[in-house]
Length: 420
Image (tube, rainbow, N blue to C red; front, side, top):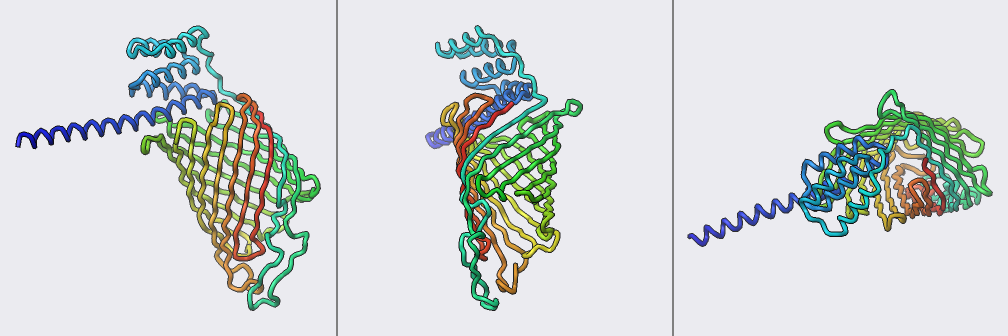
């Protein structure tokens, strides 16, 4: 009986130790993501939020020299030399760090900590690009459109001008943002986009937008943040005014934790657009998307984003096929191959179903169920914090029960981006 009792005690102690170890792994993962978030705040100029995270990390407190070193260096980059020196001294007294860490600490002490980064009241991003597209007119993949058995003809033969046309293009984008000092977190934004095709100039387009928004984070939990923005945009294709849109979007991150030793945060997005088409008002619609999202830090240099949501595309002027309802799925994977070389993969899929038959005369009782898939691969070379060069490939595909709407397109482009 005594041996059995000792066995039970040993097992209980083992389970307690195992539970404590698992909890420590989870805490380490969360601390890693919080340190990265503090670094992002410093880069964005929000040193107040960064220092709040660093102080919360100190309260944990970290259990190894590496985490204390990260906190000290981040204090230094946030313009807090006294806090940095305090952490450096604590690290040296408590852990007896190896020569490499002592040398790094002495290097930062010799240089002195940088001055606090002042938040930018005005931000500007400009980019240029050039490339090629295989289907600039969204032409259907097949020249033959099958009709219903009850239709006047068995099939339609499309003219060559209606089939996919390829062309090369050049383009430019400008995005500006102005913070409102009188209302912390509020901002005004504007954007302009231009794409010119070399031969098919009737499909060249211009788009401008103006909007306002507000972003911030919780005063008690910096892992909870939000960004709400509304804007009005106008799109011209060729010389025609094609689309007017009123957009409202809200994005929020709600929490921070760890799953299987990986830092993870989760949140939700809501998007609404009211679309008007001056050339054909029957296409007017109201689009609504509600999404949940999560980000997992697979490795220190790799971030996985997952999205899932419900979609409603409501007709407001008698569009053929009626309303569309369905779902969307998305996945993004970002990885830093090195400090300068970055690679991003993004996948997105929409599954929709219309509420009524599209055209009973030609297609009978067929109800469209378009499935739209997008895949993008982007390589970036970051020359410095302000200048980036990139190569990007985008593949777009739409499957449809009606041949007239089934299409695919691909684009290859190269460009440069400047941030000020």
